[in-house]
Amino acid sequence: MNQSTLSYPCYCQPQRDILTHAKLLENYRSHLVQMRGVPDPKLNVRVATCFLSLLEASECPLEDVSTAHIHTFITEQGFHYQRKTMASIASYLRSFLRYLAFNRLLPKDLSGAVKRPYMFQGEREPRYLQDWQVRQILDSVDRSTSTGKRDYAMLLLLAVYGLRANEITGLHLDDIQWVVGKLLIRSRKCGNPMELPLTNEAAGALVAYLRVRSQSDSRSVFLSHFSPHLAIKAHSLSEVARKAILRSGFNVAHPGSHTFRYSRAQALFAAQHPLSDIASALGHRDLRTTLGYLSFTVHPLREVTINAGEELA
Image 1 (cartoon, one colour):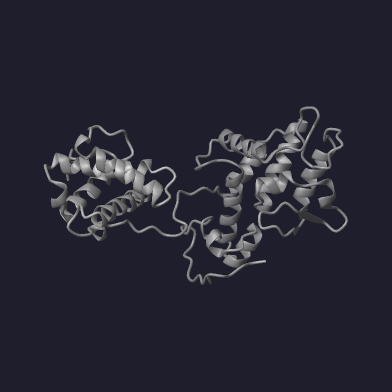
Image 2 (spheres, helix red, strand yellow):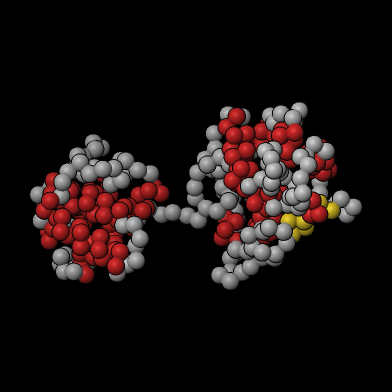
């Protein structure tokens, strides 16, 4: 099937001036902002502009638009974009067609003719690493320096527990309960503190770092190496994680501290842990949030029941 030249990619700069419909596009923009509450309607208007461009190239008056024109437009955009983007384009086009029908610029509402690609909860590019890749990243950290010992301890906590960056940078010295072998996580997104078992590997990494930790009045576990040695920030930990992943040469979408969180969730899923257990480990209240962390290529998810009001401890 040869690609037509009736329309151009929606999200690129328009290649044609739509002078005939300039007033219509401006009214549509105002409608989106004032009536629909869309803060930045740029993409909505670009899709509308591109669709009108196709009509002009086809020498089709607006009132004569048909389902055939809609199908041609969606097909041509499919040459440029993948399914996820096409789903957005289809939604924007449906909105524009409803606007035209409401303002009687079309004889009937044709928005139902726009075929939106099916998208599924949790469908996205893989953002996780395999266990052996996580281990290789950890092993690549130079632990001969105090900075390396600190970075290794932080990355290990990310990998072992799947914690958020701020949960690790929010650790205080009193949160490491050596006697009972527990790690207290206070700075959780959902608010309630959580106790985790302190593994031997995590304890060893923390001890190695604390022996060379900079002198400071701060009770935070992880400190910057620059005076006055304040608590390290979450974005700094994410940058440490990003550089470690890139240094190892692994190709993963959006590398950073959350990569280890995704990887931990995927490892638990691959080990056939119940979804409720994975959600608890990640501190999620809603199972639908947990689904977004998982790729179902590891093994089929046979049955998941989610109640709208379900919350996990």
